[in-house]
Image (cartoon, rainbow, N blue to C red; front, side, top):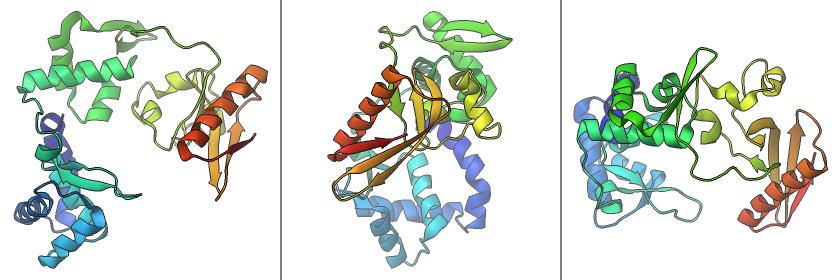
Length: 271
């Protein structure tokens, strides 16, 4: 995926590289310093890596540090490491995933196309283009390469690609409390309103589906939620577009309970 999409994202980032004074020479120097700091299984936080770079005379704060690390990620040098308490870390990709497969461009394109439409379908070419930064020509080639491994249907003049689900959908009703910018919502552009068939989300957000902290009922956007985490408990407040019935309310409380279990705290629900 990095080999396919990295060059496209670099092109999109070029303006920001120039604005931050990150020419190719500086970025290569930063990569060498990062590689040296992380070798041997070291896993460091962003703050720690910033200190390494500043120690070598490189300005590495704010957006500039973000771009330095992003460049190294796009080039396949670094990736996410193990959490250090509540802090995220970075590690060397070759050490974190030493047995990564090496694919030809066509193999990688076929693999990514199949994985996207299998995990996100039904979705459109425009959805995949927005998600991946690939060109329309690349995506069409990917669809040609995987042939009949996907299903295809045209609805209201829009072409959707998808794979048949491996197992039946769970019984209704089921509620999910999605985190901010969850992939279920932001994995789409053209077809995102498939998740808002009733139009309720658009009517409550001035025509735009808000991507933050959504309540999902049976696959559809049904409202928003927020949390208040205290020392001994967590309160989940749900703002619903329409009142839930008894069964839907039980599903909402079950979803909140799962979140409380994740935090290890008792949970109270306010609607």
